[in-house]
Length: 91
Image (cartoon, rainbow, N blue to C red):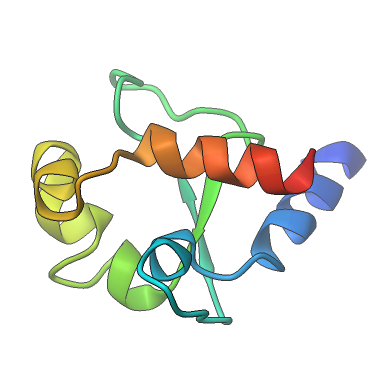
C-alpha cells in the first residue's frame, strides 16, 4: 500500500459510516469496504473504499448480507452513491 493510499484510507475512515449518515445518524468505528458493484471479479484499488459500520458492511442488512442487487433495493441508494458521498466530503 502506498503512502497516498494510506492517507486516503485514513481520511475515509474518519468520516464514519456512510449508510448511517444517509439515515440521519453518525456511527464511528468503521470497516473500509471496497466497492463491489460493477467491478467484475477484480478488487478495486484502495481509492475506491466506503466507510461502513459492521452492521452496514457485514451484517444481515449490510452490503455483504444483502448483496449488490439487494442492497440498493433495501436502501434506495447504491455503493457508487456512497462512494460519491465520500468523494464530495473529502474534496
